[in-house]
Amino acid sequence: MNKAGKGRILLSVTGFNPQRWYELLSKEREVVLEPDGAKDPSIDYAVVWKQRPGILAQLPNLKAIFSIGAGVDHIFADNQVPDVPVVRVVADNLSQYMCEYVTWRVLDHQRQGMLYRRQQGTKVWHERPQPPADAVNVGIMGFGQLGRAAAKALLALGFKVNGWSRTEHAMKGVSTFHGEGGLTPFLNATDILVVLLPLTPVTTGIVDFSLISRLRQDGPLGGPCLINAGRGKLQREADILRALGEGKLKEASLDVFEAEPLAPESPLWTHDRVFVTPHAAATSDPAHLARPMLAQMDAFERSEKLTNVVDRAAGY
Ligand code: NDP
Ligand code: OXD
Picture 1 (tube, rainbow, N blue to C red):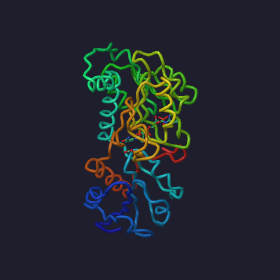
Picture 2 (cartoon, helix red, strand yellow):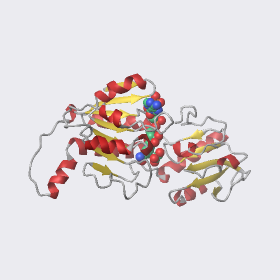
Picture 3 (spheres, rainbow, N blue to C red):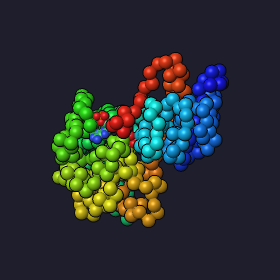
Picture 4 (cartoon, rainbow, N blue to C red):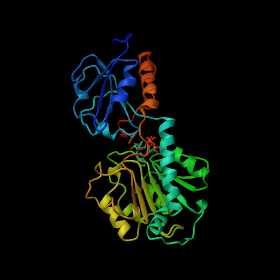
């Protein structure tokens, strides 16, 4: 404790420059930037993105771990995470970014953006039949904070929306499905599948050939489309390519990949029915997220309950 009696933070980030997080968190608390701070008994909190495995277990007085993102698979990839609360990001700003990404990609698939870009490349002037939004069923796989926000945005545009989750949910205007038993009926009623699941031992590899084949094959778009903005390891990329090749999948928009960055030799880069973005659907913005994180630490020190704490048994 210092800086007016407030607990100290270890900031441990790999994969991007944490400087902005460091500056904003340091305004109110002492922050130690890893690799400094290993085994430091005066560290109370860890703020992390893909921390180096094993480092959290060395902090003897760690009280809580804060994920820089909504997902926490990057934390649990380390099998020595101490048994303290893990807090993830839930924020309007993040939901807004994800809604923008999802509506952008859904509209592009519905309005035949890929086809028209190919036509433009060969100067073809040819109008194609256009199904209206209310003829298209968008299925959101992972009906949580981000999935439900995306559903509201899609409903406002007139799409039919289905949601699939682990436990039962209801939302006005949405057909909801849950659990293993609800999966096939959900897929059978879906033209554009939006994957917003967390990566857990149960969901790993769930988007495979069998799942894609169960999407509505005779829908108004001439074949189903896949959008994955959840995690790359949810999908089997060889199966996506097979489904595209065998006509089970019309198009895909992929923001996340089994291995990131996507390898230069991946055929996904050059496939003319695949749209690739570099894990950019909803980036955590420290300008919006550092303050609520600090406020959670303040509340915790007043003996109030942390919010958005991960269920470790479920893994998300
Ligand atoms: P939530 O925890 O709020 O929602 C997760 C949803 O997935 C819940 O509806 C949950 O069901 C469902 N789910 C989990 N496991 C299963 C399962 N085995 N079977 C069926 N449904 C399941 O997470 P968020 O909406 O906040 O975020 C979702 C994911 O989006 C994150 O984990 C992260 O991986 C990804 N993400 C990607 C970003 C990007 O830029 N590409 C940015 C931000 C997040 P239930 O409601 O019953 O618990
Ligand atoms: C997240 C992400 O989990 O950016 O928030 O992927």
